Length: 495
Image (cartoon, rainbow, N blue to C red; front, side):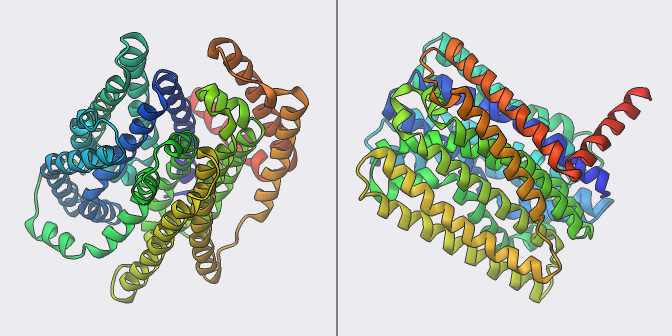
C-alpha cells in the first residue's frame, strides 16, 4: 500500500468518523433528554454489551482478516468465505449470550431486564456485519470502512428521532434503534462485500480448525478490544452503583467516538503493515491522529460545561468527567495504533507469535487492573460525578502504561515519535482554547438546544477554524498535506 493510499484511507475514514461523532452525540442527546437517570444508565449498559458481545467471533474474524490481507487469489477467497460462514453460525449464539448477560447485569443493578432483550436481534446482525465491514472490507478496501460505519450511526440516529423523540417510546425506542442500525450496517456491508474479489461462501474445514486451535492470540486481542466496551459494566459489577454510570455515559459518549476516530485511521495502517510497509506509515498515521484529536481535546477542554449541559443541565456539575474521558480516549487511540502496527508487522511463526501473545496478555492485565482498582477507589468519592471522574482517570493511566511499553518497543526498532507534530497541535489547541475563553463560550448553558445549542455550535466552529489556521501556520507537514489533497481533488475533478 502506497503512502498516498494510506493517507487516502486514513483521511476518508477520518472524515466519516467526524460525521459519526456528530450522529452519535445527537443520538445520545436525543435519548438523554427523554430518559431519566436510571433509564439513561440502563441504555449505557445495553450499548456496552451490544458492542462487546459480537467480539466473541474474533478468533476467525482475526485470522480470516489476516489471511486476506497477506494473500491473494483462491487462498484469500477461501479464508473470507470460511470466516463469513462461521460468523453466520455464531450470530444466534451471540444473541443468546447477550440476552443472558444483559438480563443478569440489569437485574443486578435494580433495573428492568426485559428491555435489554430487545437488542438481541441487533447483536446477531452485528456479528455478521462486523465481520464483513471491519474484517474483510477493512483490509481490502479500507477507505470504505468509515462510510459503512457512518451508515450504522445515521440509521441509529434516524430511528431514535422517530421512535424516541416523535413516538415517545422512551428506553424501548432507544434500544430498538440498535436493531435498525444493525440491519442498515448488515445491508450496506453485504452490498460492498459481494463486489469484492474475495467474496463467496466457500468453506475450508482445515482452515477453520487451524484458526480455532490457534485461539490464544486472537482471544487476547479480543480482550483488549472488549475492555473498551466493558468500562461501564465492570464499574457496575465491582461497585453495584448505578448513578455514576450516568456520568460515565456522558464521558464515553465523547470518548467512544474519539476512540473510534483513532481506530478509523488504522485499517490502512494494518493493511500496509501486513504487506511489509515500514515505520513511515505509523509515523504518518500518528501525525494525522495528533492533528485531529488535538482539535477535539481543545474543544472539549474549553467547552466542557456547555457540552455537559447539552446532554442535560442536570449533568453540568460533572463536566470534568468529559475532559477525563477525552484524555482516556486520546491515549487509548495512540496505544491502539502502536499495537496494530506491531500486530501487522510481526510474522506469526515461532517466537514472533509467542512474543506478541505475551505483549497483548500484559496489556490485558494492566487494563483490567486499572478498571477494577479505579472502580474500587471511586467508592470513596463524595458524589457520583467525582466517582466517575476518578474512575476514568485511573483507567486512562492504565492505558498510558500500555502505550509507553509499545512506544519503547517500537523506538528500539527505529520508530521516531513525531514530537514536532505534537507541539504544533498543542500550539494550535491553545489558540482554540484562547478563543473559547475570550468569547465566553465556556459559560454557555444549553437549556434550549435549538437556541443555545446553535450558539455553542457556532463558537465551536469558529474555534475549530482558529485551530486549523494556526496549525497550517506553524506546521510545514500540515501545509504539505493540505496542498497534496487539493492537488488530488483538482486532478480528479479535471478528469
